[in-house]
Image (cartoon, rainbow, N blue to C red; front, side):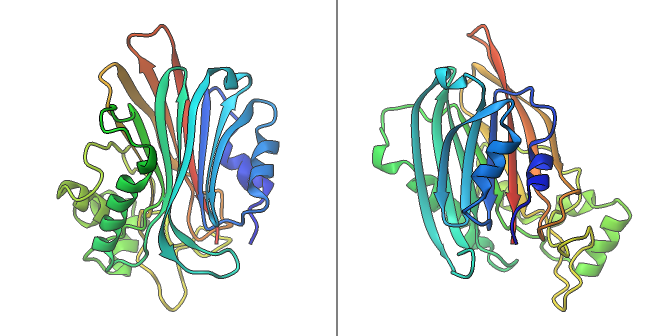
Length: 288
């Protein structure tokens, strides 16, 4: 299936009062996404950089004339396997490091291994990706990037609950109970296995996987998969002079052309020692 222009318009939204828009995509066709994004953002934003690895894609757009504030752009990717098929579903990550208005930021769009049983494999992939990206130009004496954002289909699932009890909680708007005891990503982060020092917004929205394509109904195939928050956005701030405020973190239920619901976050960064601030909107989207 192709991503439609209407989907992209919903993804980027109508309120464009942000300096930087980052779109991370997984399992999408390669040939038409950039054109759709440029058409949807033509009035307000321009492409600053892109990173591609088959069905894994990452785009950074800036407001008009923002290229004047861009320096030190670097692109990298890391393959952790995957399979072929019509759109060549590659697992791994693509990344862009960019200095914008004096702030070095790293954005990582990733797609990790599937299935609930593969927790340790996902943990290992996270570590390998973190250590491998930009390793060829790594300076051991340099400070880490002040801002790092991971977005993608991390594929962490719900642990220790069957599909019908999980769906019953979701149906009754009690899905918050699943987070504290069943979400693999939160469990692994608590154990110190992945994403040490990272922040994530409250998962107030329903699990974003797996839906029947073309609907807001969870999987009714013979597999009747357990719903899960596979699609996440996490960020890490490593500079005490930068204050980060997460204004929103939500799923876009109105997009139904994928078996995932895309998620987006609105992150505002304020630099204490500089007389300006800027807003960044980060979105991630999957299509199968």
